[in-house]
Length: 117
Length: 108
Image 1 (cartoon, each protein chain N blue to C red):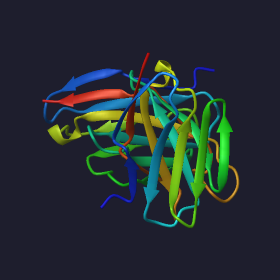
Image 2: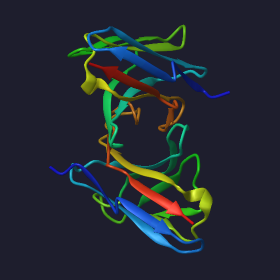
Image 3: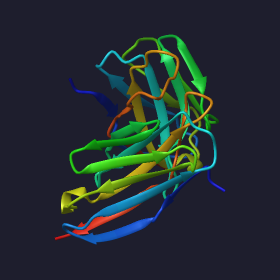
């Protein structure tokens, strides 16, 4: 199993450009998450998905969009890049059974370092 | 004030030392995670616990729900333990709140 893979690893964008960060997992996990990590700050949840076709906002969703058309893929879209979106982005997944999501181990991708100039 | 506070922010140790990293939180939780972020950036889940104590190799995690506090201990520390250790808590919903991490450096 490759686990959680993310592409690209690095990207530089100009203000106003758009891009999609790709995330794929091959563990048949139902839950998937997008986080951003800013220097000196804890990870912040952007969006998450509890299964194909279902997504919901996290703590910092503004400026981002997601879709979950398959169990494996959870792309994150930046429509109009802004300098405030300079960050490291992590995708994660977990297999959730029962009543209490996120009590299960989350598996993280290697991250995408994005700079907006 | 952050809902999850970790201490210390930075920690240096000599190889072989016993390490303790602390995590305090201000909200009622149903679970707490300890994560390790490698120097290259990758994040690995170490423990998930909701009560008591868990042990995995040289790592021990404890939690005191009443005191809203958790500790991560590393016995016989080694340079390969050098990483950022992150505490994260789950409360009310299915989303985690992360601490800012403790940067550990272990020197030979």
